[in-house]
Image (cartoon, rainbow, N blue to C red; front, side):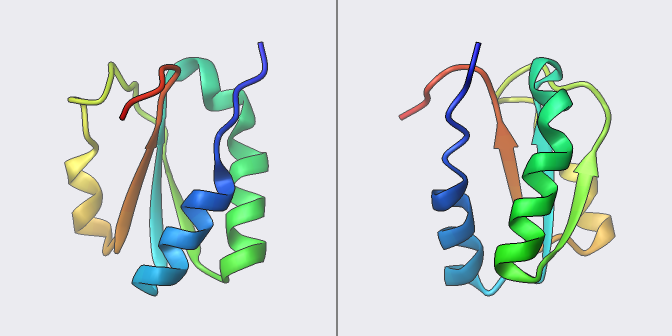
Length: 83
């Protein structure tokens, strides 16, 4: 199954916030796309991208410990649309 990760929206938000260090948290099923996500964000924003490698059980399972790493913006990708 192909998911639309809406990286254009993520990149716009990174630019809007002038985020220099971005944390990425992915549902386990999306982790095979981590290299693609990291590369596109880094190339289009110049931001440092940190990947949260631990499990993610949904929108309520935020990687709050990333704040210790100086993350300016945390982006969480899941399988379901959330409005």
